Image 1 (tube, rainbow, N blue to C red):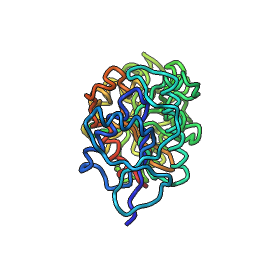
Image 2 (cartoon, one colour; image 1 turned 180 degrees about the vertical axis):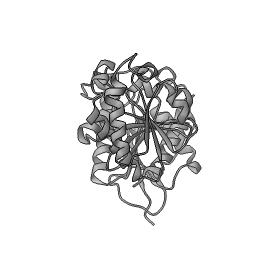
Image 3 (cartoon, one colour; image 1 turned 135 degrees about the vertical axis):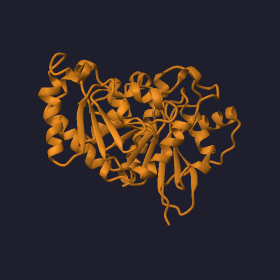
Image 4 (spheres, rainbow, N blue to C red; image 1 turned 90 degrees about the vertical axis):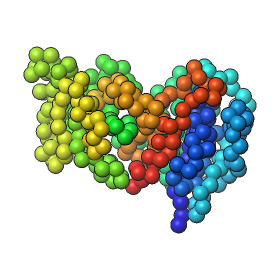
Length: 323
């Protein structure tokens, strides 16, 4: 039987991406049987392995093809990186991380890899390098406009209607037709995976979900009509609920997902309960894409103390999201 091929990009070389990836691979007994291909610099990998006291065998590969036995290899990128000072953003590390990610996405689009796991990048480093995208999801959204940012954990699942944009812009995007389209796309995307999501709860925009119009009219004029229309089309969706209680209704309910209307509305509660093991998922792609839900953690980079649990979860989740 041919095994799935999982590509892993190592993220910003100045952060903890290489560290958590290598630590996760060292716990290979908990990972799915697959061919795993790393996209990155051998110099950085070997430097990190020496620092961590690890001795993983990672041969280079020039072609990515199917195998019947689990394997680990490196698709080595030609980058100017020989060594990067840890702990702060730079144009050099931003360019290196973007080139690896860009190549991995190309390979995923070609079908050479079925799943892509991305270690954390620095948006600041990308900006310093002249990369015109705010992050992984924004890059993918330029190619796949139907992409949806979601967050997964055993205790809470959240989908974001909007993500890395200013709050004032996020509010302006809340329109009835756009919400309805998002609701239906989300349900359709999840129906094609092994993960069962049978109930969606929508957070309101305003305090107390508008308090019957006393604290805002978006719930009654825009959000509720979109929910009712989605329900009329057969979707199990409810709300809008007060944002300060809706996440408690979904906590510990594995088949329930909260739809948050903007980035921090969903990410603050999610990271409160699942920071160490949460997974960032991009839905709506022709391949699976996951990532640890934490950032580059420049403050602990190079110290060997980064926790790999979120990376392990991100790798394992790929098998549940396969079509």
